[in-house]
Length: 290
Image (cartoon, rainbow, N blue to C red; front, side, top):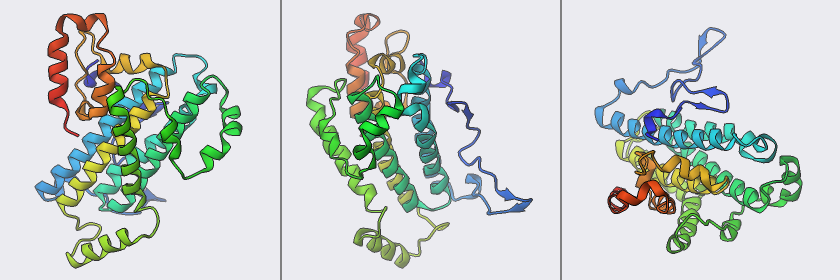
């Protein structure tokens, strides 16, 4: 399925018309002046457009995942995503909104929530897929209430090749640590604020390099989230999304992730891939960037 054919802006009954589609007025009075990319220096605008592209690509995958899984009548009552997809959507969408307004530290906090939520959703769904959401809340109360993510070590991510599973666990831990440094007041955050102040950087005066650094973390966090969420639903959902009608891999930003590429390789057994498997594997290897 080409990404252009996906309903990128629709998920669980909500249509996204713009990454900054938030009312700027209250009672007829402007609350704040939203940033227009066209008013920014070209290099900063380009960095923010990349942020927007990453977010939209993630939402395309999330939207398909939810819609495809919801074909199962039990989805609404049994899957945490039937209720939490809106929270995931809001945190993801906020990354580009916050970045556009120069609030990069806050964007990192949202990425931390996204990763933590994905870990917990994956763990709970794999542990007890068929139970109701209400029963899950009781059975996994301690897991869902805890800020610890040690449960990632107990995840059976069977669509990842064996050789990538330890690397993925390390990646999740590293990313969670990077994002957590901006959730609570820490020396890392204080030193970053001191450095930014000395360089004359503040919200509205951010540097393209700062946005690019956020983009690097954001695409890695979102790739990890997608790996986890794809393992929280039946395996055929990943196959439906990643494998195009002619057997080729989907044209998608996150095919640049070694972990998403690893999941894609799980479907090399498919009949439609056999005639061009060598070319598909070569293209997949060449596409990996992070």
